[in-house]
Image (cartoon, rainbow, N blue to C red; front, top):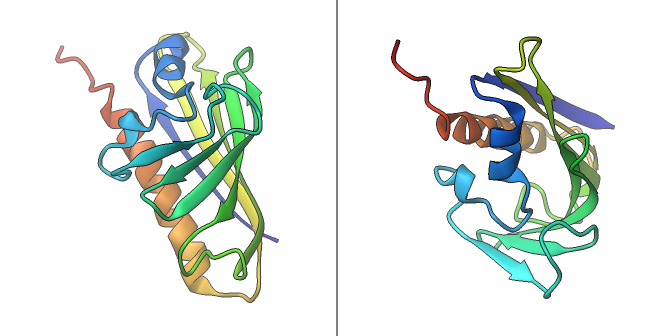
Length: 147
């Protein structure tokens, strides 16, 4: 099993960050990384089992949604090389928000796990880069106010 873990501290309260990411279909917060997100089906973007197609290549499924604890988990049904369904099995990724100690900021983390058909570094690097860029885009939605 392979995995990657990334995190960032965002200088705004957790409810503001959750409001940005809570809808599985809305990836407007990741505008530097995601160009297009299409809804597959007609269920709400907060229901387990819903699907989205990201950039015409990544089919993702929402498998666990927990707004009370500020997290959700997705799986990738298919993607382009090096993350096709033949190359990667059982991919899951969770995004979790945790309030900072003073409740003025948010600790955001993404943790992903998968089984690869080989110890392919391209797959590892792909997920490392993808999750880093997603968190960078998320943080960029909340610029630090000038003091």
